[in-house]
Amino acid sequence: MTAGQMSEYRRREESITLSVVGEQPAEDTHEELLTLNFGPHHPATHGVLRLLVTLQGEVVRSIKPVIGYVHTGIEKTAEDKAYWKVIPVVERMDYLSYYFNAMAFCGAVETLAEVEVPKRAQYLRVIHLELNRIASHLIWLGTSALDLGAVSIFLYCLRERELILDLFEMSSGARMHTRYFQVGGVIEDIPAGFVEKARAFTKVMPGRADQYGAILNANQIILERLRGTCAVDADTLLSLGVTGPLLRAAGNPWDLRKAAPYSSYDDFDFKIPVGTVGDNYDRFAVRVAEIYESVKIIDQALDGLPEGPHITTDRKIALPPRHELATSMEALIHHFKLVTEGFRVPPGEVYYPIESPRGELACFVRSDGSSKPARVHMRDPSFVNLQALSHMAEGSYIADMIATLAMLDPILGGIDR
Amino acid sequence: MPDATGLELLAKELRESEDVGARAILGTLHFRGRATLEVAPDNIRAVLASLRERGYTSMMSVHGVDYYPHEPRLGVHYELLDMSSVDRMTVVLRVSTDEPVLDSVTPDGEDGRGWPTADHQEREIYDMFGVVFRGHPDLRRILMPEDYEGHPQRRDFPVGGEPVIFTHNEGESHGVTR
Image (cartoon, rainbow over all chains, first blue to last red; front, side, top):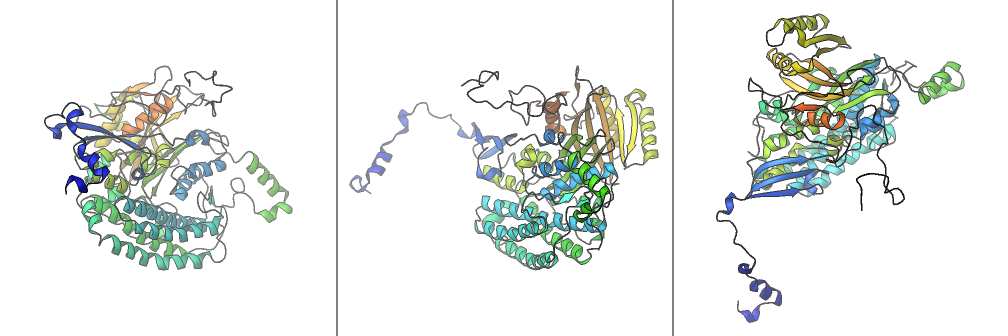
């Protein structure tokens, strides 16, 4: 191409010379370290996560996560609210698995107050927990695939999540942050038609998950970016406190639903998917396989859904039915006491762990005998798992770090609380 | 969980062992199926190391508690887990607000092993309660801003103690200028 054919833009571009810019770069540019600020507002950080990444060329040498951008002091807020009013605030911690937050808190308070949860309520909880697990995994799958360049899968995942949110709306009136779980059970029995709609969902979901697998497992870019990248062995992960799909991907079949069943999980027959080497592909495959197992649990819970009350009949803990208020003085008194002061919980401390979509989610509650908790702490799996990021991604390429961060599935609402 | 008898036996065993000693174990509590061992702050690393020898190899959680108005006010809880026998154990220690200092369990100890999972969680306790962990590799605030004053999870820290700055009250909050 001669100069005469060049556009004005190209001519100016060609005319730029580096000789006037200043010092020449260091002799060996491969030795030079570059500190890159990554986030907090970056689509690949899955929230407001900031990473200070030190790079040597394309290779990540160190990662320092900086968090706290969405810290809202929920644990402090909870100390100022009656026990039943804490449920809506703790639900907003890990905003993709709100039923799990509520379950951990309610379970802790039930243990403290020695409330027995009716069997039907336990089954209803399991149905909603597993629906929520699928919804959470769908968001993870969609956004992670988006990070890796597969755009269409995001739309498919949100399509199926919509079916789950419709079910949540049906049972509680809200699509997210439903406040469905209460201390002692669930706030309302499921409406007519819920079981049929849930069955319609469990019927289509495995086929849809097959489709995701068919799309992603045939996508060479995804496979090349996931396979063999950023593997960490199970012992290192355990010393870092990592639990959930990340640990199972490394071959350790630790799942609290099996190891220490709560809420009647021992009634159901399901498998725990585990990986072999613990690379990014295993992390991906374990979560996708968990979707099928969750569907199996929901089906069994719908089949075996027992009759009976949906919340404890202990009037000191749960509100009396609405119709009793017109006829029973005692019910009116209980109702008044519960909505004004709330119920009191015997003094003591409990730590109640459950298996959330991201690992061990535990709620520590200390009661001083009043109607407000003296301390609520959530052991959030995202917060602990984030420590493993530097172990996973140091020494790998920066593009692998993006894939690893996606497969880590951190939820910043849970990390910062 | 070890039952109440198992907890007492374990406490006795630790008191008689050389590396922990009788003065390290202050008490035991078995409540709602949760076994708690109260230890002296100075001995935390030794107690955790010997519990690791007894199978409690995973540390699932470290969190702080403010026992206001009881003294010593600040508590640190370590939740240990034995995965092979599905058993949990809580180790609790208390420090005063006057001298809230204890050894960090994060770095490797004399036996070459530490609890790296405690890294962020000890930073959170430092941030929220003001407990200082000696020997922590990177003890900085983690959730609150670095220049923040006070430890918000303490019980005497007011809810809503964070003033919102408008033009009319900008002079009242220190350290903020335009």
